[in-house]
Length: 79
Image 1: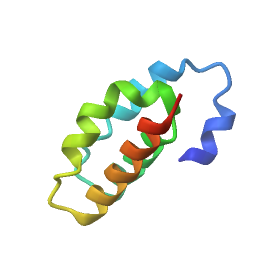
Image 2: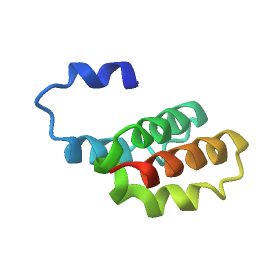
Image 3: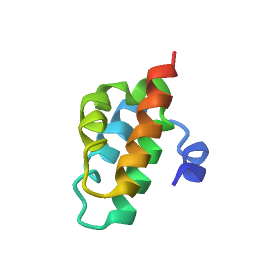
């Protein structure tokens, strides 16, 4: 998913974060994990989703917990 980000020139990063957020509830584990990782790579524009990602660190799936943990670390470090 992140390889698409450079192709999204002109897209409002906050709108992109909002669009990605809609995928956080997807029933497919792979989709949710990909969305969490993509949000983590948004940098400061993804920070509004930190509370949601922090809750996802308690998900029953280890894949989601790991992805959320990585995303939270990246967003916390983003300037």
